[in-house]
Amino acid sequence: MYRTTTSLPHHLQHNYSSSRPHTPNPDPLDNVHNLDDALNLFDKMLHRIPVPSVYHFTRLLDVITKMNHYHSALVLFNKMCFLGIPVNHYTMTIAINCYCHFNLPGFAFSLLGSFFKRGYTPALPTFTVLIRGLALADRTPDAVNLFRKLIRDKICAPDGIMFGTVVDGLCKAGQTMRAIRLIKLMEQVNCKPDAIIYNIIIANLCKDRLIDKALDLFSEMIGKGFAPDVFTYTSFIQGLCNLRRWDDVVKKFEEMGASGISPNVYTFNILVDAYCKEGKMGDAEFMLHSMTARGISPNVVTYTALIDGYCFQRKMDKAMDWYSNMNDNKVFPNTFTYNSLINGYCKSKKLDAALNLFRFMQSKGVKPDIVTYNTLIYTLYRMGKCPLALELYNEMQARGIMPDTFTYTAVLNGLCQNNHIDEAMSLLHMLENRGLNSDIQIYTIIIDGTSKHGDFDSARAIFKDLPLKGVKPNVHTYTVFINGLCLNRQFEEAKEYLVKMEQDGCLPSSVTYNVIAQGFFKGNKCDEAVKILKEMVEKGFTPDSSTFKLLLDQLPSEGQDSTLMDMIQNFAPRDMIVSNANS
DNA sequence: GTAGGGTTAG
Image 1 (spheres, rainbow, N blue to C red):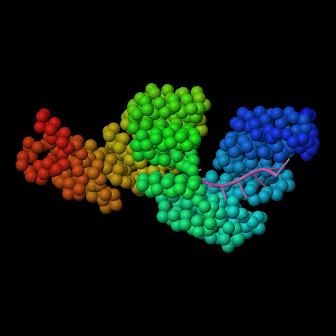
Image 2 (cartoon, rainbow, N blue to C red):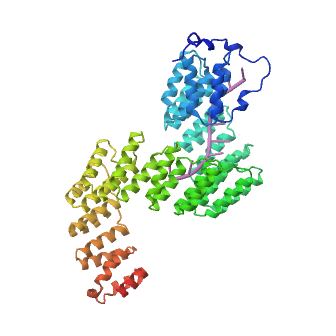
């Protein structure tokens, strides 16, 4: 893979070590402001005689990764290897880091192999990157093992950055307490914790809603002489926003300013998003303006939060205004932005607008992801557009996006509701064969679908087989099954299951009672239905309006039953009584 | 000379 200099193209065969300029030149990297600049410079460097040293190439690759263009950095790295331009352990570490960012620790480790082959000894940063890559790929146990092996085999003595990387991995894997213990261990091996490591733990505690624990660590950190910074405060503001403790949010924000720390775009984005999620769009817009006034430019996250907020309120005109606004300000929408808009149009039943955006985003080079496909597939089925939904379901897989639980649930539900029971059954079997059947929801959908479309025997068989499949029915499953029993006039059994579900630890819900009461009314078992309604009310549930409608239809024959009258007085929705009186 | 840890959105 890595050619030696003998295979270099003729014009590249020069002495690399003497490539430092003799006169002080301006650093060409100073003129690199975007990816295009970087790629142009790389090209120029390739054609320069003599070819610049590995140092210059490494710095260029570093600049490219700092701009988050990991893919391009890898392309250039591979090009260097192909052309035989030497790379060293600095260059390799950058490349390893890039693979880690793509969640490809396997590729990263194979680069490590060639590292050894070329006689380089990896230093601390290389291992730190590998540890981070493993943690990023949900392989924190492997990351911790590598860390321990490095210490045990005395391959290197970890420093604060490596500890910080492990601590972050542990926190992200939900082992915050273990991470805190690691800080204590650090002190024992004479490697002092620093401000960043405290920030890492505080951020994760705040995310886990453990604000008080985070505050303890905050005091500890100050006690040790570390000043909190914008990261620290932003973490607290985020945690408090999640807990909706608005007064404390404002307090922390002010405390931050009083400490001379300026909020940055992350801080503002968290606030903008929190206001949007609360539906306070005016406050969110105010935040955007006040960040601009402070010279902080809103970015794609800021605009997307606002767009998402308006989409949630179905104010699509407002959402599109902000979409134009961001484009005017040269902030380019990404997949998240389009997903919000597509979701908004879907919920507003403006399918054409949603599909147009779906095509438009791709024409702009923005790739749809699983959320885009899930939103559209779900909506298309709900609107009865089965062929198009199926087309997108196939398309996503052809593009390498694997369906998730949401996708399968949407497809199964769509097939059932549109009376394609056979297709739903074959999808269920496929999921079972692939072992993707641990989610009870898919069975609930199938039981509902089969029993509503005249195949109650299948529904019953599937329900009875649930224990065999190791899946436990929940309230929803029981309710759907009881509904099926009522539809098939198995009233006695329906009542039995109302008891059975409770014995099985699933307390019937308001929906369960409504379903069974309606089932009995519709089966002309009014006395039984009323009994169930009484039980329901005793348990503190309220019949819904369609149950009430059925109940009111029975009123003349029920006469003066006082419990019934009480129930109506207390629980009937107002419009229901009025409309019934008028009819 | 150059490489490594922390913050935002479905």
